[in-house]
View (spheres, rainbow, N blue to C red):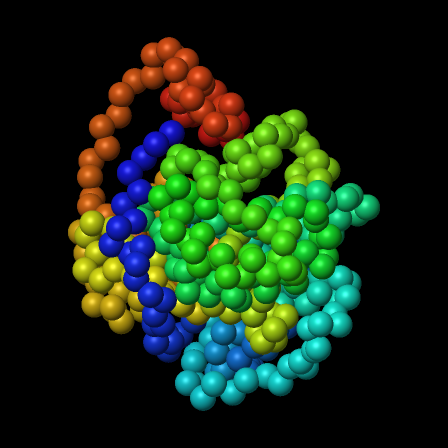
Length: 384
């Protein structure tokens, strides 16, 4: 499906930083699995980079403090999807007292050591799902033939991945190298949309080097949802995964650009995942750009710092297709937040479904949307 990209206002904007918030609400839960156990309590003093919640089992990941300061409380915060997530509230002391962390000779790190760094430093998928990366890279005997680096930023407005590829190209290429020591894939493919094909020039000097000879770029059509994992795999490899088949079972691993950069930072600079790049955009935004923001930063701090007016407009956390409108300005940035959009408030005109079936023909996930409408109409919400 072709949709307008709406990226022109931020695509060429360089990455800027937003000053740290005085209070951060750092989410403990990031995926659908077990909630990590807090390792701090109210009243504790924490250092920047310090682990504040530990993943003990299941599909979860460690959490680290983005700043130094004092733990005020652990409270439930309601997110836009209606779920309530425990957050560790930290009062920033602005001292930047940083936990000392061991550095490594990156040339000699084994696959097991690299995987452990990814696990310990709380790396997750930054494309939105926040699936624990260490779990994804645990291959359980599967041989990986193709490693796809997902630079297909198909959501309108969002350009955070574009900014990373344009400005931090060398870091991304080194990060790809670290990951492939674990995966040992024969083919490494960086996927980029046609509208961003100029990024080939940024990668060219690195991909011409012998050590990166197995890396190539695939230019894909400007279509939504081209960046979805299943659609991307089919577009790049021609393989359509069977229902319930995991990509690694087909010899494929997909990772988002932001995730690769986070791995580079963890391995090279010993920096856990405490911040990410987001896009600020939307037709009602007065400041546009790509910004590096600490995990746990409340939306209200971003709007206040940038002088953005959130009154009488729709504020969306994420992209316009998969993001969620927020009503509580204290909702924080998470590891999977790719953007904050300021959009017009509009009354949605609803039309009755006539079960024509056209939606089934075009759905990239092979769903039956008319059944969603039927269940909603009949109040069968738990059957969705």
